[in-house]
Structure formats: structure tokens, C-alpha cells
Amino acid sequence: MRILVVTDLWHPTVNGTVRMIEQINRQLEAMGHEIVVIGPRQFQTVPFPGDPEVIVALHPEKTIGPMMLAARPDAIHLWTAGPVGVAARNILGRRNIPFTSSYVTKLPEYMQARFGVPMAKTFTTLRIFHKISRCVMVPSAGIIDELKARGFGNNMKLWWAGTDTELFRPREKSFLDLPRPIHLNVGRVTIEKNLEAFLKLALPGSKLVVGDGPERARLQTQFPKAHFVGVKQGEELAKHYAAADVFVFPSRTDTLGLVMMESLAAGVPVAAFPVTGPNEVIADSGAGVLHEDLGKAIEAARKIDPALCRAYALRFSWAQSARDFLANLAPLKGSVATQGRPGDRQEQPGDAPDLLD
Image 1 (cartoon, rainbow, N blue to C red):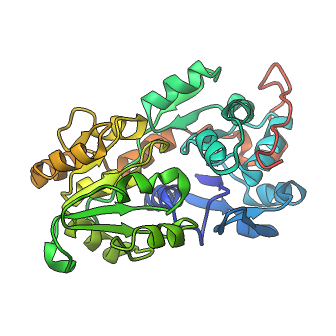
Image 2: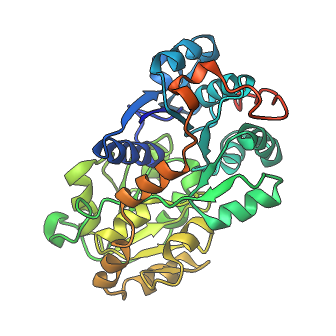
């Protein structure tokens, strides 16, 4: 099967969504499927306001149609609802061509925190975007409940992401020469990650932040005793995980948080707030502690057996996640998307607005 995936988040950006797409693509290719990616770099781009490491496509609707035609896909999946995703969705909607989509970031919360955009406005845009999707893959039952309460339809399906349990595994703690215990956070250093809630705590040992982003300079100045080491990938990232004693996840807006699963695979317990993402990942596993007092959660998490964390993480594999992803896709008849499927729908949907308009 040739699968066309459309995303506004792709290389060179480094974040959880990009890594998720990479892993799913890799697994699908290993199964013998062909993946075609349409991302922002295939168009004219500008830096995202306030976060220049993220690039935004300008007017992709002008040229994305021929790209989709050239791909001759058997199925189409839209990962994001940014300009590229919206352009693809509107073309598909006008032609009654089936597609699937994902809800993998809490975009309304992000847009409100970063730009002051009312959440209700972003939810309305996303509701329109996903309305005609054959299946909206959501990595959290709690998020599905929230979206239903916001008026989203019954086309949502729970879809769990996986983790690379071969790369992320217990290793020697001596990799990091820092005072113990080492409290680790991995991810984009942005305002919605709520890192200040972690960094302001009076904790023994060390605080280590792996990642980069627009908030890094400010936080480094405000918290000079914390160690900021920038982006790490592959083996080097895995070694940082395994060398930590507690993984601290202060975000209140992530839908899932792949970094928590990677930490658990490395045998490192999680401390977090009791919000949707951590509630879904940790649940009643005993592999982490969730508390509104993050300091208390960290203190309790230090006592968790690393072997318990590792055993729990082994339940989640990217191979199974990719199989579930594949089963959710909506195959096209004739393998040529742009021919359309007249009569598939009783109503002709309107275009979805661009979130950045």
C-alpha cells in the first residue's frame, strides 16, 4: 500500500510529533508499505512566530494538489491541522475523498498560552477540520471524552503510540557525572511545557533539561543551577534517560507525552501532575507518581523500583501501534485520490479555516 502522510511538523523540527511520525513510517515501511510525506519544507516557509525552530508553510493550497496527485496514494492520513493539513483536507473534502486524521497535540491550550487565542475558537476550527475524517486517531481516552464534550463527532478512535524499548533501556548510571539524584526533563523548551514548575522546586541533587526552544535562554538565566544540554537524539538521548533517577514531566497540556514512555522503558520512574497525558500513561501502573504538589510526586517517585517501570513499558511497542494505525486507514478505490468518490457523502463539506489566519 502507498500511504500519503501530510504534516505541518517535520524535519528539521525535533519534537514528539515528528518522532511519532518517524516511528510509524519506519514500522510501516518494514511491513512493506510505501510512505510518501508532504511536509512544510516542500513549500515556501517562514519561522513560526516566537519559535523559529518550527517552520510554517505559506499558501500550500496553491501547489499541494499536484503533489497529492503525483503520490497516487492508496490511503491518506493528515497528522496535523496547520496550513499544510488544512490545504490537503479542503481539497479532499471538496472531492469527497476519504482520509483519516490525528489529534496528537492539545493545540487549543497551546494557542491560548502562546498567542492568547481563545480555546473555543481553536476548538471550533479543529471540529470543522476533523468532521469529515473517516477516523480521528486520538492517543488518549480522556482527550476523546473532552473532545466529545466540545461537540466533536463519533469518528474518533483511541490509538496508542508506542515506544522503542530496544533503544530506550536500562543502562549504566555513570554516563552523567552530576550530583544525585538526577531529575530529568526531555522535550521542547517552550512555555506550554511548564518547565518553570519543575525548575523552581528545591530538590536535592541535579536538574537536567534535554531539549531546546524559545524559552531556553530565559530559563537558563532564571535557573542557573539547572543543567541545559540541548537536543540529544538516538543513543545519546537514550543514555541521558537511563542515567537519570526521576523523570519530571510538568506539562499540563500534552495529549500523551512520548517522553514519559521512553523514560519508563529506560527504567526511570515518572513524576507529573494528575492531568490527561500522565493519567493515561501512568494510570494505576505504579511506574510513576501523579500529584498536584510536584515536589511530593518527585520525592515518592524516587522510591519506585526501576524494574517495575521497565516491565510496564514493554507493553507498548511501535510495531503494534503501526498495525493499529494501518487498520484505521481509509483505503481509496482505484488508488488515485484525485479522481474522487462521488456520492460517498450526502453533504458537501465547507472548507476548514487556517488556524493561523
